[in-house]
Amino acid sequence: MSSEKDLGTLPHWDLSNIYPSLESQEVDGAVKDLSARIKKLNQFLEKEKISREGEIPSSIDRTAKLVSEYLQMTNDILALSGTIGTFLHGYISTDSFNTLAKRKESEFERITVQIKRQEVLFRGWFGEVIKQGTDFSDLIAARPVVKDHDFFLQETVEQSKYLMSDEEEELASKLSLSGASAWQKLQGTVTSQISVPFEREGIVEDVPIAALQNIRRYDPDEQTRRRAFEAEIKAWESMREPLAACMNGVKGTVLTLNQRRGREDAFHEVLDQSRIDRETLQAMLGVMKESFPTFRRYFKAKAKRMGKDALAWWDLFAPVGESARRFTFEEARNFIVDNFGSFSPRLAEFTRKAFDQRWIDAEPRKGKSGGAFCMGIPLVEESRILANYDGSLDQLSTLAHELGHAFHKECQWGLTELQRITPMTLAETASIFNETLISESALEQAQSVEEELSILETSLVGTSGVIVDIYSRYLFESEVFEKRADAELSADDFCEIMLRCQAETYADGLDEQYRHPYMWAWKPHYYRPSLSFYNFPYAFGQLFGLGLFALYKERGEDFIPDYESLLRNTGMGNAADLAARFDIDLRSPAFWKSSMDVIEWRVERYIELE
Image (cartoon, rainbow, N blue to C red; front, side, top):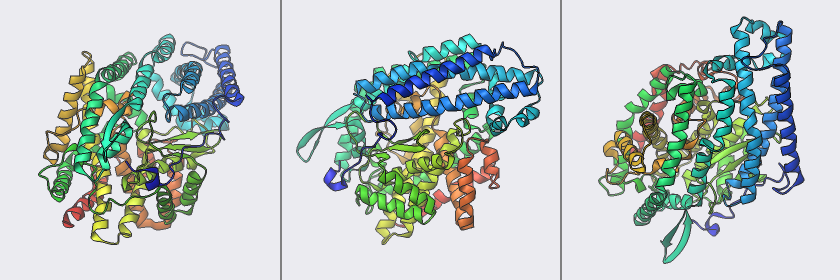
């Protein structure tokens, strides 16, 4: 693990412009304000009899007035709750031992659980309003705020078909705090607090699991990577039973609620959430599967470079070529800002602000969540980015990825919360576009064959994860849902399914003795009860982003306003309609293949450089 001296001072994010501190009166005041706003909306819904069994207004004007008031109150509540929630999570995600933050989050969640109930009541009522003959077009035209939320209201009507009774929905929402959401929290707490004794250069240190994973991925010495892998596997083995219980709890809840709500299967809700159809998903998955032989050629070429017959899991991210080059945090900042500037001054200036105003928490440490993510803060119109930076080009690319999420949010500020709800498929658009900007710029600036090889390696490590590994996770979650419908699964079951799915995607590109049976244990994506299959959207974002990047290369600066407009509108249209602005047909395998061609060219170039 690189020292602070190697990387410079790694920043912790600054949350003080949101609220001064956890103990501040401002936080407590905001929570009280939120509680009062939620209570006011509850009174409004009750007074106006807004529920599925409630009253249907006799006129368009009356209906529009009620819808308008609901939208305005809900947007205010969501902006305030989003700000408070991000602030509290900012403490917990960087220090899971912080009991004060956890207590405040628990109090906050007991208040916000009512928001789901309010949403359900309105959805059921509005679905009945339209079902019983109110003309949607006339209603939309009746008031500006209603017209501004046209797409949200269309989705509300469609999703009203999949509701339990009002009482059941309210009970499910309340039970989630002690059920699926509690299992999700437990997984996050368990995985963030694991630390492992690990020896390097004769010194044994307690290493947080996220830092150990970085050693397993990126250390130039194979024996060190292998020891890190073995230590990581032992750590997961020690926690396998509670984590298996978490997985069973979350997936069992999702299955029960989907069945009760009349969903066709586990995919039904996630396709609606993703704003795509099955034809689009199958077109993309088919092209992904067809690409596996190409990726296996890359894996074998990498193994040959390393003097091995086949890669082990600890070799997948291993540095090749001059990839031992490390970037201090300041060097990473300058590299990213400079290369973003070649695309868009606005993106570069925004990125500079994110670094300078300490929006990024970069230091790996005990109690901090692994991986990386970006959170928006509605009331101050900023973002915060969590990373576990280690100086590698891959981690630099991760920073660029998360800055893409932040820029996406930047393009949407000024819209209401309900207008900004972006499906997970399109949520990866700007992040993948940013990654591509970095990799393409780095390739153009390569000073030697070794440096070009290093950059291609970093790019292909990322894309193989997003295509090959993501497909294995998609297969894993599909099988888990299928089997969990019949009975709980053991930790052995999860490991067996995981290894089988990895075998199907990696095949002979990876040594069958050294795959990772516990990928299910530490990936937080599996444990989100409100968001299943948070895997294929990464592939969607990767390939969609590459397709957009190809259009940028073709159109130049004229592309940028359309791109920023797309980012601004991802909450106000389905994926197919938004893509059609660029003459992209998402249901056509041809589009996905054209994006995959870019990746295949990189594989061929990588092999040529042997």
